[in-house]
Image (cartoon, rainbow, N blue to C red):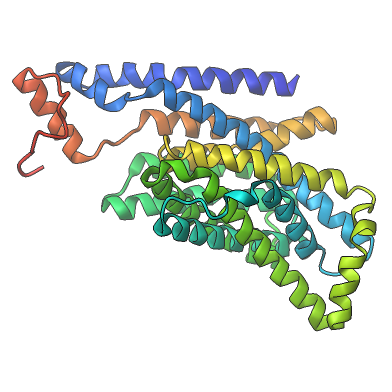
Length: 377
């Protein structure tokens, strides 16, 4: 019941996004209706589709938090040393193998280098999250801390625009508030793992900005970009795992881990969460996310990603039988309100508003925006 209700609400929200935006724009500037509506609603149907794709990705990533935590806990219970590094290495190695032939197919070195940087930045976020899991941070607390990436993206957007993006910042704060209601349940007790996990949202937010600019500059490189990121993730976790094993037990420890890998995969409650995290949580979702970044603004992507805890709560209610509390409903409302606010409170660049206004005054359609110079804009 909870899943059906959430699906209906989020579906209606996506439909209302475009409707409300057009109504508000027309009401705001009736004298410039035609040009401003065109400026605000370019490719609206295509954007709505990719926002829906990112919403599905967020649902999968919400479950991935729980699956990754379950995999690590199962290895820790079995006495496997450095369970976090083992899970990370196997998870990303499984996601990399099917795409390995695309590793060298980037259109240019600049695109490959930027994908490498994104992989390194996001790899650090994964490493911090996995370390925090091993130090006692819960999946719910990690999901909340990671949701702070929307504030990082809002800050980066304001810095690049050299202007405070009030709508973006307010939407990000509203989304984080909603996640807090969903995940914290009034508990503010912190552990050392929580402190380490704080680095994750910084890396995730910066990574989204870098990925968005790279995909818009090299739109055909979304598959090579994904495989390069996965390769970097695998290399980072492999380095962490095998260096740690060599430090603890020498070369014999590394060889023993490789020899016992089939037995490791048979650990109770380990394999299925690992496969879900790798195939659904990485391979499928990251391919579609890289593709979506060709069409969507990075702010839209980061705010949609903050719905991960919402989907995790819905999944827990449907699969585990957990009941929604008042705080859960408040959190759902806040997260959805943040998405709606982000759609309605769009701030066009100053040149675009000036251009639209002058085109209205001159009676032109505004179709030749690229060729019309604006003095002092």
